[in-house]
Image (cartoon, rainbow, N blue to C red; front, side):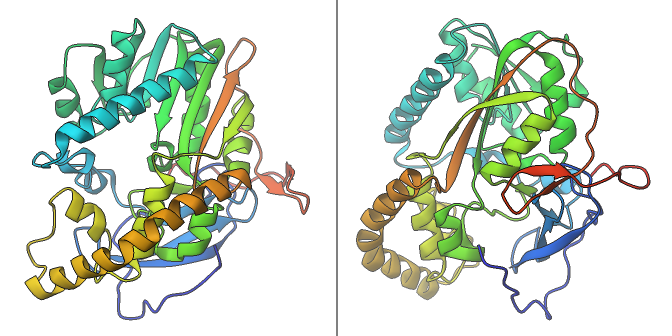
Length: 371
């Protein structure tokens, strides 16, 4: 994605906490990668995506306060309660859970599962029904209520990983499906996960790839940015380095996501034509804002009718090509927790060398800042 500056002179900086240090390596030097402006909704304002000079992680600045962020995760964020095609969606969702199960069981056949950011609880319910000791945790109260209403399989916790006392080395599998980008303290979080997992346990994270082809093609309208909910943005290199710093061994990086990538590319491409961001998903879930005039809505629907049939197959083809080139718009990383004992001590910031390898950037002066 190219570095570009949008005209944000008339849009005030969003209210929130300034991010002084990289949330992964705690380096204090960063540069502007992208500027994104939201003109509507409770999170309206101007945001900067900043790239750490040391480890190259990209993070949003400012970061909204946690109580404000929580309001962005209402029930309809996970699924529309009035969607007319819900029966069809249920079949698709069930297939997604079975696919995820097959992928993780290549590395861990059974045991205890912790699904972080469990949302509506579908994966936890499914894995519990297959004999796993499955637990889901989410900081959204709406998600907890929704998950518990879906069935009795598995158990669900409210809050963050740091709010609960888990037995050290007690978990065989930790999963985060499009969740790690929502966590503002990834370095601390990954070390916490390492300490909770048994030796040989597997950590699985699926995240948007900010270096992927779809991100480069659609720029600041890329669906994977989702400012300000997505607090950090990973490339395969930054995510793998973060896992290795926390004591994990990366086993596999998967660049193919037919669940997310083609739709995200279509959504992002149409957002350059639509009058409002996320109109496609709002239309699909019957959540079009009440302040959208009929003529504006008609224009957007007409644009979808004309461009959708042309762009959809191109988006599938582009996504498949990107995955073959190692540039998928969404990636899945599988890492193993090796050895015994706690995670390694907090590392010095890593600076990416011209060859792409990471090297120490020197000691960090002053106390660290939790963001």
